[in-house]
Every structure is written in C-alpha cells, then in structure tokens.
Length: 339
Image (cartoon, rainbow, N blue to C red; front, side, top):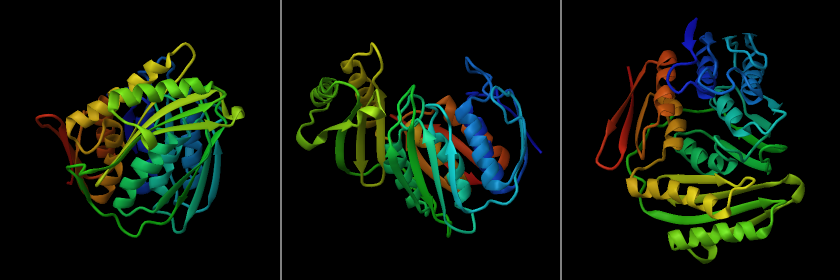
C-alpha cells in the first residue's frame, strides 16, 4: 500500500489524479490523506470525486472515502476494462481533468474504449478542450498513443453543461519523445469564443491580440456559440510548431474587461515565445506521466512550477524513474530516466 500525503508540495487535485492513473496501470493500491489540504475548500469536490468514480468503474477498484468533502481515500484497483463509459460531474468542474485521469489507463485496456465526460470544458485552472485536442493529443500521438478528442458542447463556469468525448485505442508500444526544441512555427492564431455574450467583447479581445502580436486576417477567429451554452467567453491563442503545439487560454467573467482577458492570454504566449522552450509549464505537467510510462524522455520548458515538481514526486512513488529539472539560460530542462 503506497501512502501519500496530499498536503505535500502543491497540494492540489493533481496529486490524487496522478495517483489514480498510476494505481490503475501498475495495480498498486494507495492511501491518500490530507486531500487538497492547501486549498480554500479542502477535500474532494465534485470534479475530483468524478475522477475517483471514473477510475473505480474502469478498473473495478475497491474504494473507501469516496464522498464529497472527504480528505482521505483508499483505492485498490482491479483489471482495467475496455468499454463505453459516461461520467457526469454535475457542475462546471473540469471534464478535461477527468479525461486526463483515465485516458492513460485505458491505453492498457484489452480493447478500444470511448469515454464521455460532461461538466465544464472551458473553466479556469484547467486545460480547455482545445488543449487536449491540439497540444496534449499531438504529444500523446507522437509517443504512440491513439486518442481522439471531440468537443460536443462547450460548458463554462458556473453553469457547466458541456461535454467532451475521447476515443482510445489500446497502446501497441510507447515511443520515447525528446522535445528539446519546438522547431519552425507553422501556424499562429487567436480564437474568441462567446456564448450569450455580446459580440463586441470578442472583437475587443481580438483587436487587442492583433495589436500586441501583429496578427491579422485568418489569425483572428470569432466563434459565436449557441446562447444556451452560455453565458461564457474564452480567448485561445494557439501556436503550432514543427515538433509541438501549444494552446494558451484566458477567460472572460463578470466585471472583467475584454482587454484584460486579452492581455492575460498574450502574456502567457509571449512568455513561452521569449523562453525559446519547446513546451509551456502546463503541457510539461501532462508530459511527465506518459514519459515516465515510456521509460524516458525529455523536454525544455518555459518555467518549472511547484505543480510540476509535485507531480514528478507522485510519479516516483509508483514508477522506477527519476525526473530531474535543470536551469538553462532562458528556460528549464526536464529529463525522465528509468531507474
């Protein structure tokens, strides 16, 4: 039984999600205490409980402590089962984080699977659906995983109501990936998504991006979503390079000016561009686990967050790998090695 202190390091929900994923894959049970102890509302919230329920159903696990607000959990997995699954968060909690919990495990299932998660698809502190499709999905494909993401309906905070579907094929073999450089830029564009929000908001966001980034024409895209999907607004900046794709996002909310939303997204993209790194801190977080499963890999990143360091520590409890971080002139370097 692996014992985990959920308050260590970053102390958020990623500790639990990584433990669930690797427990299913390795068959090692774990017990976690102090779940989300560093958050204003500690314990399991609906999106975290949805990840537990999803992992339980997929692996036939025996679980104790799977209740709202619980600060401890024991999880003992069985065999991973292929199938068609549907999970509902019931709030605007992140559908994408639930998917990222179960997809690596389903790669080890004996057959193909389809997973549909309903809840939030575009909310703060979680990757939007487009990040899974363009950034995470591309990197996983480069490592040998066949996963296809489809955004069925956008769901914004606080209403939720969105849905993302993932189709997962069994993994033949991992390929090690070295993302030391991003390569030449192939495409760059910004998208403003609005649902039950005045179109002028999107125009102001895109005008601000155009001025800051020097973009025009097809690089500025305006998507009007059905009113009943909202209210909601998200501004996405996508940078596609030869070896990697990155997606940066900022969200509109009540009393937040469109120009502020745009400055937020632009600042994220500019930091990444200036660093010269292959990946941003958020994609770095998501690459650690599949690289560890592959037995090795490396990448340069714009910044090493506490979130990433904590994730590396949890991975090391389940897998015989070492994960190191080194500082370079304008960015950082991460290497995953077996043993």
